[in-house]
Amino acid sequence: MDEKDWRILQTVYQERNITKAAERLYISQPALTYRIKQLEEEFNVRILLRGKRGVEFTPEGNHLVLYSNKMLADLRKTKEHLENMDTKIRGTLRLGVASIFARYELPEILSAFLKEYPDVEIILKTGWSADMHNLLQKEETHVGIIRGNYNWPGKKYLLNEEKLFVVSKNKINIEDLPELSRINYKTDLTLKTITDTWWQETFDTPPKYTMEVDRIDTCIEMVLHGLGFAVVPEISLKGYHQLHRIEVSSKNKSEFSRRTWLIFNENSLELSIVKAFVDFILKREKNE
Image (cartoon, rainbow, N blue to C red; front, side, top):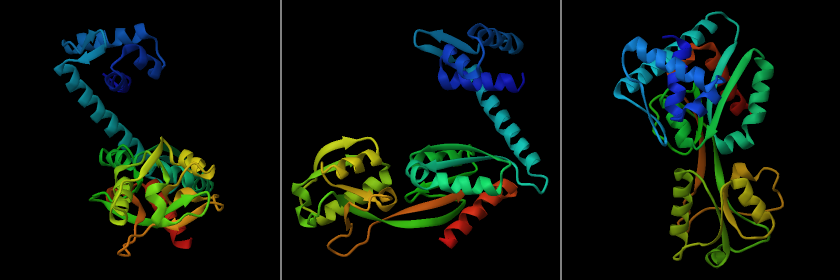
């Protein structure tokens, strides 16, 4: 059993479908099926059970998947440490970044970083902050950039703290918001909690939602065309100077803001590539 077998088991487990797993692995379905049968003969166990909805792993198969995950993780860490044993900054940097930060800030950051360190390869995953937090916990990424407050036992640096705004195409009064059409967008729980708390502290009636969209930039375009107002973080308003803004605050003068954090495990700084990226980000934030 070798690295190829570990990846086969890991991929089949993730897909629960032989055809899809074969496509991801760039091998034929018969070749994949044959190799699994060979593994079953090698260990004298049944690994997979086929059903109408795909495949299921036996207890023995699950054990081999866990072993494969561990071996692949150990192999990756070994390669990373070997890459970082000389003084040159090179190798693979794995990042997990909140989608909205990746949309509005990350391209410029990565472009500048790679100009300084051209021998670095970036493996990037983006998504909800909670998912990026989990990836770092599972050591599937070296560094995370997340938004909102999450418990993190490792190193944690505040990159910025931005305001929230009510935005509209034309000037509106804050007291009229309950009667106006509000455009909602999908976001993570931490931002939703902040905006819900602000609304409940400010108004006695629920908002009048007339549109629900999946992305914040879609929401802002709807606002730009006069279809309603929205409550959005400052980061999403780059280039939208024509929108009318009202800073979000409550009657008791409470301030509502959105924080962005750089998080990582302290021992990951042993990798020169991680230390270089962390130092680059912190220096950049300090100079801005």
